Image (tube, rainbow, N blue to C red; front, side, top):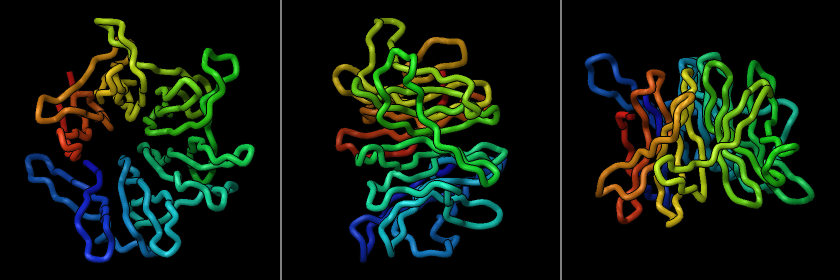
Length: 276
């Protein structure tokens, strides 16, 4: 199963984004179902799906009445907006409120806006069985300066989470434990040259602990990476006419990845790739 979003011209809006679900039976052609055909119980301006598992699909949608962004869950019970029990986003905040990943037992992770000393920042969130937790990359006792924001991009069935965090030195990837047992900062370094990335984000993790993500090199060029459990980083690029590639997910076998490639006009295209 593959998920994502598409853009189409719209007579009433300058941008029209629609999520989609692609279900591919063995040996059969893919069948695409737009989320707009599922008729959610509230009016939406646009929708994008970010993660999928046996438990359903999650993403974000913008309410056309309030222009506010909300996470949602699409499962066998239908399409519904997610609320985090006991926490509310600050009024008038930047609408960084979205679900990015869901595992097979239904634990949902994403990003949640919060206000700290009058400034709006973000925490990661985990929602499981109706209970919500805000999760921040810990800076106490680490080599990093104080963390200003955290975003969780994916969770596997062992409870391992991945994502990004920001501090005064830039953007870093991380992997950690949903249960709070450990966190590891991840900054891409080319094993052949020792060159360090200027930005690293981890976007996906499978049950084997293989992770994928993207990074920017010293020249500002976008690349993807794969790091298998216990192994070194491997850069994953696509040939021209694609000049920047972002891996967004990895399958259970570790053999396939999905991502977004950009041409020389910065137009995006979706790709499924064989991983090294």
